[in-house]
Length: 199
Image 1 (cartoon, helix red, strand yellow):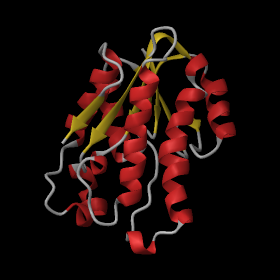
Image 2: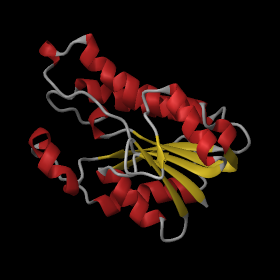
Image 3: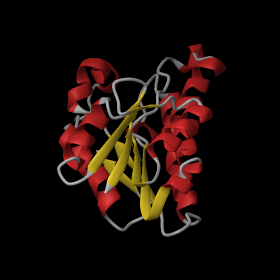
């Protein structure tokens, strides 16, 4: 398969690419250092990415920024970062990408554990993750041409503990290679509308 991987340079994206490139062709997309450039917060940038690469068999998003900070200090602008990037960015990958995914293809988005198991300073991230799960569930019953859609909800990764460890005290981090298997299941399997939890 030809698979578009958005967020390929991130911690999750690198693990997914390593697993899938063994048997598939990976087209890496991101802000920099990728085969094609894309800014998830820009509809024009997403359109240009699809026009550049053409048709694919699957689209995976491991991208999307969220705001972390105390609720009492969070501003609407802070929260908007999560909405524009992780929610709208991933949803727009689907809305603008439907015509570029082959019949029977798939989309796999990324949510996260905070929608189910919250932490302090993580309300905005929890919002974004829950929104993605809801979108996937609702969109699955309307996808055209046999296209499937799922999302992966990972715990904090072992490889990301240097950056995110202080937020996730008490959580049992999961290795990137284990998280990557959920994306393989989504792409190569037959299910749709699913949330693959890797907790």
